[in-house]
Image 1 (cartoon, rainbow, N blue to C red):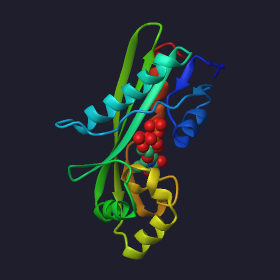
Image 2 (cartoon, rainbow, N blue to C red):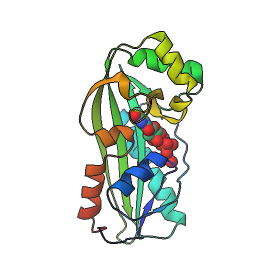
Image 3 (cartoon, rainbow, N blue to C red):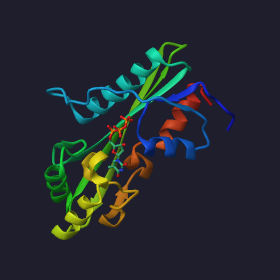
Length: 192
Ligand SMILES: Cc1cn([C@H]2C[C@H](O)[C@@H](COP(=O)(O)OP(=O)(O)OP(=O)(O)O)O2)c(=O)[nH]c1=O
């Protein structure tokens, strides 16, 4: 793909940077720091779409470039929306809840075209099935420190790969950016 520094990824997530780079896209990175508190009555989709847009718009207001990409990932298990765990007790609680059952990972992404004054956003869902986890397995995983900056306290691409029996849907969506959909959207918007 041609070099295009008109694209800015509004993210501090090394996973998102790696995923977008793997698609052969050239872009700049500028983190978009926003308050990630869930609003009362917000559905999971509304939540990730609002945050994805907010991250992209925050950076679009101050950065240079034309297309700004923001994203937000959450885990939804039995009606509970899980963001990043607050501490190891919270991580343990989340992993015990995910143990032996299926949950959904939802990533919302938004692309702001600053010149055209328009935004395209989409929420993508992947179903993830965990095997039953032993308490020692959970404790050992938390001790690695990996869960703390991950929604639902796990990383499918890292130390938690062996906990996942199967997934239905996009793998990159679980890692933090649904690549197929993001690249399609960039192309439809004329960014590629
Ligand atoms: C479920 C899961 C999440 N994650 C990560 C993706 C996201 O980085 C993180 C969820 O937090 P987010 O708030 O979506 O993103 P972030 O704060 O890391 O980065 P930014 O807002 O600057 O873009 O969890 C994995 O890396 N692997 C996984 O298997």
